Image (cartoon, rainbow, N blue to C red; front, side, top):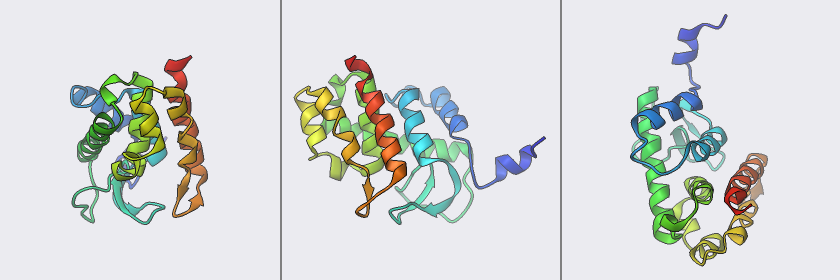
Length: 174
């Protein structure tokens, strides 16, 4: 039997637990569905202590790179709160630059996921966003696999993430 105390106070935290907190305590604050949160969370993973992501950026929790990141352990509520703030920023970008309010849920979720990962600055002028603005959803979804590099190198994790995003994105188009 695992040592529960060791698991809950360790460096790794549970994406499922954080999603549960968000769906329970922050459901009215974000539009991204559980399916979207699962893609983002599982791709980013969850860590209680700061680390550098493959792009070399200081990160905490579930892919959070914004604000002040202190060198300490973070608890589940702090991680959930930071993640909601970061999800909100990605959603605002999608709403402002990709006609987010009119997007079907699965397309919205996939678009929030890539925006969370890549950043609004890069996405707002992308071909994908241009397609979303003219309701060419299938073309937009098929842009996702192109975003598979970090620092010019194809990363297997991004290849996998983009395929999951693409699959989710296309669900409402069947």
